Length: 75
Image (cartoon, rainbow, N blue to C red; front, side, top):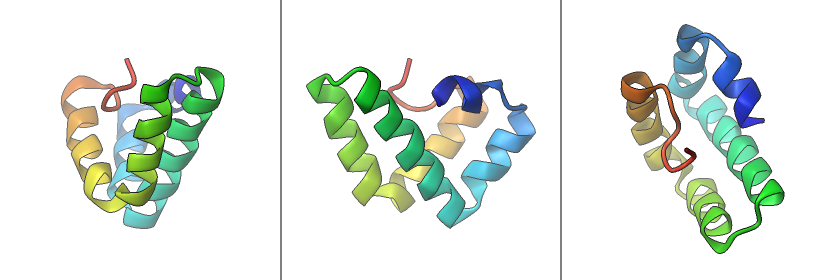
């Protein structure tokens, strides 16, 4: 799912991460997909943190994505 998200244009990714509820859904889908594929403890903990702290970490992820074209702790 992260590859599909990363394949979107930078404008679309920014818009998806800018809208609060959509941001949270995108974070949940991308993080849990990564945790399911690579079930290391770090990925599971990050998925839990981003699920319950989605509003705060989502906007940090928005800024990080604008600057680096990556999501926080995914590459």
